[in-house]
Image (cartoon, rainbow, N blue to C red):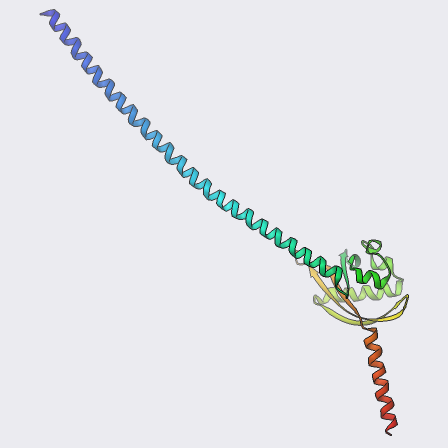
Length: 212
């Protein structure tokens, strides 16, 4: 009887331990599944966020490329106009308070002045012209800068082929800080037009005298 009791007790203990082991195993399985689901949810959320970030990044890259393409197209157009327009174009950098330095001139201006752009780029007006005309131009540039708007003038300039009448418009350009650091000018030779107007006025004057 005692042996049967011992065996029965061992069987009960075994069944209890089996139940406890299964309970522990079930708890471990549930915990593992919960952790796995949490990890899967986190991974899914991470993938969604990454996809959105990649979408925004790709969109930003596309917009940057588009902007760069537009800038390149605008640069090509500007260069084509600058190099082929018949008017004389000049770009002046303002260094310090009163130093006006030639940044560039277009081919038409090179031909009119009989100089190369390379020979005048980076040189101040005061270094290229005699004192009197340099001071006159510098004062004009100061007035344009102070006005903060385009200014139109008509002047006669001595050139190798004789004096020429130039009609020019000079405009100030602001940098990103709102400071005027450049002037852009367009000059047109109107000598022939002025001479034609003078001939017409003289003819009208002579006609008026003949009618007296």
